Amino acid sequence: MGLRKHIRAEKLREERKSQYFARLRNCPTSPRKMRLVADMIRGQEVNKALAILRYTKKEAAQRLEKLLLSAIANWQNKNEGVRIEDSNLYIKAIYVDSARMLKRLRPAPQGRAHRIRKRSNHVTLFVDSKNTNE
Image 1 (spheres, rainbow, N blue to C red):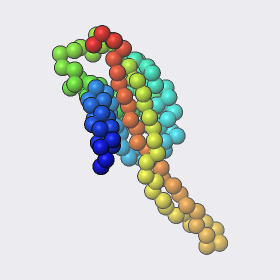
Image 2: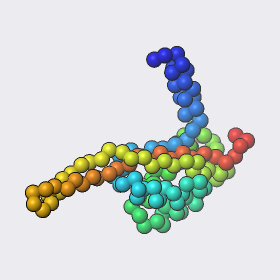
Image 3: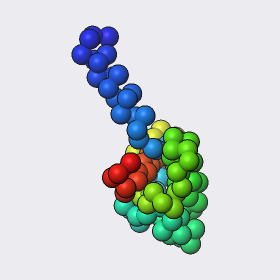
Image 4: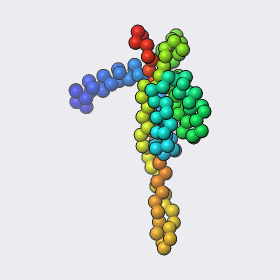
Protein backbone atom coordinates (compact mmCIF):
# COMPACT_ATOMS: atom_id res chain seq x y z
CA MET A 1 0.00 0.00 0.00
CA GLY A 2 1.30 3.43 -0.92
CA LEU A 3 1.91 6.14 1.62
CA ARG A 4 -1.08 8.26 0.55
CA LYS A 5 -3.44 5.30 0.77
CA HIS A 6 -2.02 4.37 4.15
CA ILE A 7 -2.51 7.90 5.50
CA ARG A 8 -6.04 8.03 4.09
CA ALA A 9 -6.89 4.65 5.64
CA GLU A 10 -5.63 5.83 9.03
CA LYS A 11 -7.70 9.00 8.74
CA LEU A 12 -10.83 6.98 7.90
CA ARG A 13 -10.23 4.70 10.90
CA GLU A 14 -10.01 7.73 13.19
CA GLU A 15 -13.23 9.19 11.75
CA ARG A 16 -15.02 5.87 12.21
CA LYS A 17 -14.28 5.97 15.94
CA SER A 18 -16.49 9.07 16.28
CA GLN A 19 -19.34 7.62 14.18
CA TYR A 20 -22.13 5.50 15.63
CA PHE A 21 -23.60 2.98 13.22
CA ALA A 22 -24.94 -0.52 12.75
CA ARG A 23 -25.03 -2.73 9.68
CA LEU A 24 -27.46 -5.39 8.55
CA ARG A 25 -25.91 -7.70 5.97
CA ASN A 26 -27.56 -10.08 3.49
CA CYS A 27 -31.11 -9.41 4.61
CA PRO A 28 -33.39 -11.62 2.48
CA THR A 29 -35.74 -8.80 1.48
CA SER A 30 -35.64 -6.91 -1.78
CA PRO A 31 -33.90 -3.53 -1.52
CA ARG A 32 -36.97 -1.78 -2.93
CA LYS A 33 -39.19 -3.03 -0.10
CA MET A 34 -36.58 -2.12 2.51
CA ARG A 35 -36.16 1.41 1.10
CA LEU A 36 -39.88 2.08 1.54
CA VAL A 37 -39.51 1.58 5.29
CA ALA A 38 -36.09 3.26 5.50
CA ASP A 39 -37.48 6.42 3.89
CA MET A 40 -40.09 6.70 6.65
CA ILE A 41 -37.50 6.96 9.43
CA ARG A 42 -34.69 8.88 7.72
CA GLY A 43 -33.87 12.03 9.73
CA GLN A 44 -36.30 11.20 12.55
CA GLU A 45 -35.52 11.27 16.24
CA VAL A 46 -34.74 7.81 17.63
CA ASN A 47 -37.81 7.49 19.86
CA LYS A 48 -40.14 8.59 17.08
CA ALA A 49 -38.46 6.23 14.61
CA LEU A 50 -38.85 3.30 17.02
CA ALA A 51 -42.56 4.11 17.37
CA ILE A 52 -42.97 4.29 13.59
CA LEU A 53 -41.22 0.95 13.11
CA ARG A 54 -43.16 -0.73 15.91
CA TYR A 55 -46.53 0.06 14.31
CA THR A 56 -45.62 -0.44 10.65
CA LYS A 57 -47.05 -3.66 9.23
CA LYS A 58 -44.24 -4.39 6.79
CA GLU A 59 -41.79 -7.21 7.54
CA ALA A 60 -38.83 -4.92 6.84
CA ALA A 61 -39.89 -2.73 9.78
CA GLN A 62 -39.09 -5.48 12.29
CA ARG A 63 -35.59 -5.90 10.88
CA LEU A 64 -34.95 -2.14 10.88
CA GLU A 65 -36.21 -1.85 14.45
CA LYS A 66 -33.63 -4.39 15.60
CA LEU A 67 -30.95 -2.60 13.59
CA LEU A 68 -31.85 0.75 15.16
CA LEU A 69 -31.68 -0.75 18.65
CA SER A 70 -28.24 -2.12 17.78
CA ALA A 71 -27.06 1.32 16.62
CA ILE A 72 -28.33 2.84 19.87
CA ALA A 73 -26.42 0.20 21.85
CA ASN A 74 -23.27 1.01 19.85
CA TRP A 75 -23.75 4.69 20.71
CA GLN A 76 -24.08 3.78 24.39
CA ASN A 77 -20.86 1.74 24.32
CA LYS A 78 -18.88 4.70 23.00
CA ASN A 79 -20.62 7.25 25.28
CA GLU A 80 -20.68 5.69 28.72
CA GLY A 81 -22.24 7.84 31.41
CA VAL A 82 -24.33 9.92 28.98
CA ARG A 83 -28.11 9.48 29.04
CA ILE A 84 -29.91 8.83 25.75
CA GLU A 85 -32.76 11.18 26.70
CA ASP A 86 -30.35 14.10 27.15
CA SER A 87 -28.43 13.55 23.93
CA ASN A 88 -31.29 13.99 21.38
CA LEU A 89 -30.28 11.07 19.17
CA TYR A 90 -31.54 11.07 15.60
CA ILE A 91 -31.02 8.97 12.49
CA LYS A 92 -28.30 10.80 10.60
CA ALA A 93 -28.27 8.56 7.54
CA ILE A 94 -29.61 5.23 6.40
CA TYR A 95 -28.46 3.43 3.26
CA VAL A 96 -30.04 0.41 1.61
CA ASP A 97 -27.76 -1.26 -0.93
CA SER A 98 -28.29 -4.33 -3.04
CA ALA A 99 -26.60 -7.52 -1.88
CA ARG A 100 -26.17 -10.93 -3.42
CA MET A 101 -28.88 -12.26 -5.68
CA LEU A 102 -29.87 -15.92 -5.67
CA LYS A 103 -30.79 -17.04 -9.17
CA ARG A 104 -33.33 -19.79 -9.67
CA LEU A 105 -35.06 -21.25 -12.71
CA ARG A 106 -38.79 -21.80 -13.04
CA PRO A 107 -40.10 -24.09 -15.77
CA ALA A 108 -42.00 -22.34 -18.52
CA PRO A 109 -44.09 -23.64 -21.44
CA GLN A 110 -42.53 -25.37 -24.46
CA GLY A 111 -39.33 -26.41 -22.69
CA ARG A 112 -38.21 -22.93 -21.77
CA ALA A 113 -37.23 -21.60 -18.36
CA HIS A 114 -37.72 -18.22 -16.68
CA ARG A 115 -35.13 -16.87 -14.27
CA ILE A 116 -36.23 -15.90 -10.78
CA ARG A 117 -34.01 -13.44 -8.94
CA LYS A 118 -34.27 -13.65 -5.14
CA ARG A 119 -32.87 -10.33 -4.02
CA SER A 120 -31.30 -9.37 -0.72
CA ASN A 121 -29.88 -6.15 0.70
CA HIS A 122 -27.40 -4.50 3.04
CA VAL A 123 -28.58 -1.72 5.37
CA THR A 124 -26.27 0.77 7.09
CA LEU A 125 -27.77 3.05 9.73
CA PHE A 126 -25.92 6.02 11.27
CA VAL A 127 -27.07 7.58 14.55
CA ASP A 128 -25.83 10.93 15.84
CA SER A 129 -26.53 13.40 18.61
CA LYS A 130 -28.05 16.82 17.92
CA ASN A 131 -26.07 18.34 20.81
CA THR A 132 -23.13 20.30 19.42
CA ASN A 133 -21.56 20.98 22.82
CA GLU A 134 -20.22 17.42 23.26
